Image (cartoon, rainbow, N blue to C red; front, side, top):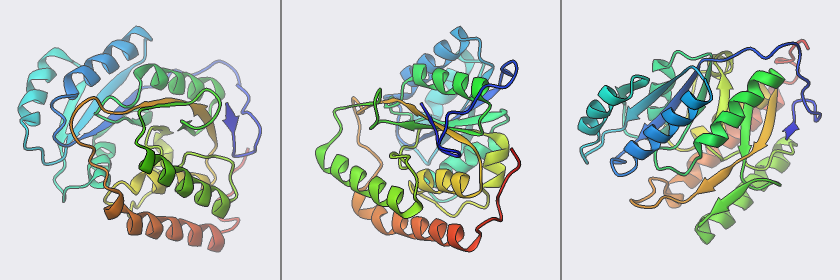
Length: 263
């Protein structure tokens, strides 16, 4: 576990304060995964005694997901279903979920079952105990794991993350990992959001780092989807990632000292 705001582990101060956590789950044509993902999440969070809401945002699905979600909402009292009323896109969908959530902290969790509910519980406990602003997952440090990661995407992932790490002078090695937990004030402090697609997974953590919020890096596991097709398309995302990285890099250069926070 690593705190990179100061490059030293954050220390717990006093008694941990329990958080209400909103889990934002963007979903486009994920009817094959949603029931299991939502039931597993609700069961794990409830067993841990964590006050939570599951905010599923339907992104213009055509596979019957809206009807399925309405049925699931009668079974899962913590489930909130909203619709992305903007253009289709991962970023637009997540932002719609952020707007609809009401938790003290917000996690972004994938609908396809690639993230583990047990990891989310660890993220939440880490945030409560260490009182940091963000908890970032890493799949590529000791304790992290990837299962059945497609080799071409793995190579591009490591290349992109190492470039980002060098450009921003940080030790965190999995910026593109969508699975992260943010306190509410971090989400509000990172606005406005520029990313309409998967590049939001880079915009959120980079803005959090640049704007001086504290964070801890915790290993997590990623499991490739068991069915369906990934919505992430490498050839469509390259220029968008470059844009948001350059934007954040420019902000970090031109705003030095502007976001310093009191201990």
